[in-house]
Image (cartoon, rainbow, N blue to C red; front, side, top):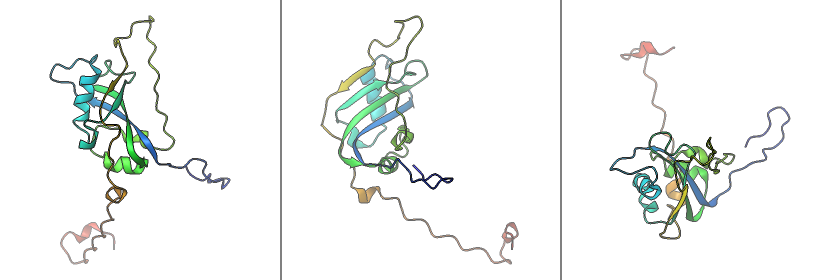
Length: 170
């Protein structure tokens, strides 16, 4: 992602917009009698904490290796987006949701293999993947809505005679 500080070699990875998104959802509490084996029910609980655009969209659900072992929903939710979108846009749009933004980075590994249990065949989930039918894509807000807010202007320094000014080095 960055130039090599020792050699000056240019970065070999860069962010590229893409039309798919894998949301890594962790720790959404399971209530209302939803069982960890009910991937659709778990997803419904998680999707209610995402922006409205995700509700009613087709989704591929994948239980993570820790789903049903650690508390809460631990899922990957795969969606098709209506336009290519950058990780920076997704990070801003999904801020404050249970979606882990680290998977939006250009060099982030997303593990998708099912776990291996000992003894073999002891997986507590009969199915680790499911599909929720719906609209073909999630409508992403326009790029101008996703731009970061402008930086706030710096507050003026107090005068040396102002109350509380003794906290500053003059």
